[in-house]
Image (cartoon, rainbow, N blue to C red; front, top):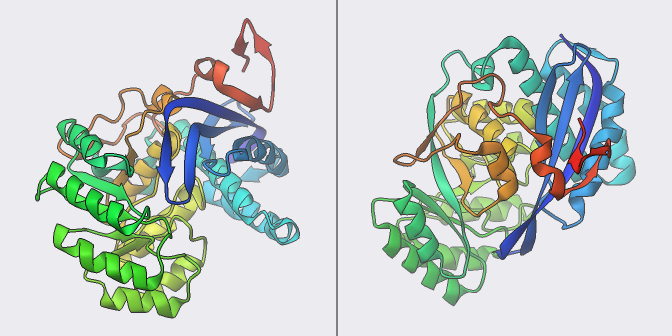
Length: 384
């Protein structure tokens, strides 16, 4: 049983030396929202809430997590899915009233991750073993963060570190995109796995043109070539005509995954565990993908808890896939992961310690906290 006594949240912003460019904008710092659940026995669990965009979103989501979490205090739940389903039902009308479908879904996802971390810690088991009888002990990863400015140099450095799969961002103009595709393939060699991500930036015709030009470079998938809300007929046409398999899912929620799976448009499903679903929702998608003979490749572009939660679900999924591994420097993420995920021949180990496998030390983040539910500071450090 889970009996919740307190929920806290912490908005964290870590500066970065160089901006990160994607098709829809530029990241100038790395935000992270952590949420902590405490039960009536004093045990804790940690989760992470998606907060990449807009730039001001982290503080809003941290406050929202504490506000929505009040509905759980004093309640008793049989397991984490019961927490997830209860909070989802409870906020259905709120979402209609406010239009805050994204932030509410992201907060529920973070609370769900924390509930699972708490549940597994109390059982003394790594999370993946709470989800599957025989989880994988290592999972394949791919290096992400290959952005438009000289990506071949970034890719070559990751290859030397042990990566064997790479994803390049496109959507910056046809000439630059094609130049970068050729340069990255040249840097990583023909044996490496190579994916493309357009971040919804292309029309159907532009996507077909890009597919025709990129296909000779041996592309494993093209991710989100078009807007996710483009007509399903356009997606179906693109899928039918593309020699490159399509990937997507980070911008889908709930029953939308069922609809897309029924259409058979995607070969690679990529929900973001902190953006929608948490462990509970994403595990359901992963198992549906396995049943459909598709791959489960969780999208990750957050902090360390996002990496770990995604890793455990992939290890338990029963479906083939890769874990996205952001290779940009991110001190906030690194203070959580430390040396837990060394890359060896394109794979990383699944932590065998209880819960997600990480210990969050709030004092490590003191100078980066922009808002916390308990703004108590002692000797320059965050209390609690």
